[in-house]
Length: 215
Image (cartoon, rainbow, N blue to C red; front, side, top):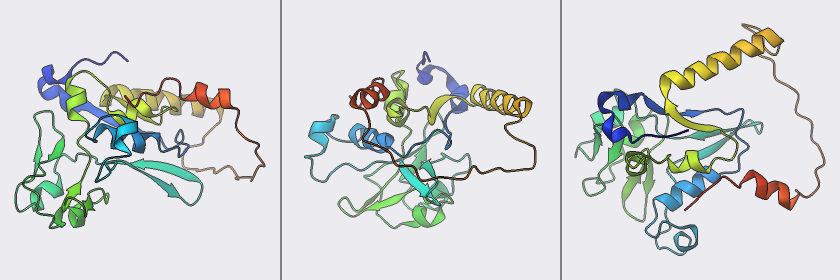
């Protein structure tokens, strides 16, 4: 998608979200790597692995029931409880509507960790502060995709206007209903069969990750 700089969009910028589609996630954790690199000093994967302390990702891929992978990140709530409980005002909302951290004001009290309903903020013992998603606000203001979205090879993470993303979801579900792939009120889980897989084809893996950029 052609991404315009949301810095010029004013209040409508709050409509931009990162949509998570667990059905597409294969648990490769490319989003975690890209996030850590983006928040490193060197801004490249080769330098990031040698940094002390090592940069940490703000997104985390969680395995559910050994069947599904779900990328978990900050939801940048409209009425964010983390902002409400922070005693030093280290957490604030940007003009675009995203919740970001000022590490210089953070005292590591963990109040935000306890308040978050998604369990997102994590404590960093190296810096004595928390670590949380900042929506890659600097990248987005430059007209770039968030690092996690750019790195995802399957489209499990998508960035765009909320209304447009929800329209795509509605159309997808409508096609499933017409084709009989889903029935209202009934959840069908396809049995998982353990298959013996050989070594992945090198060319196939490289082709899958060809659009991925970790800078």
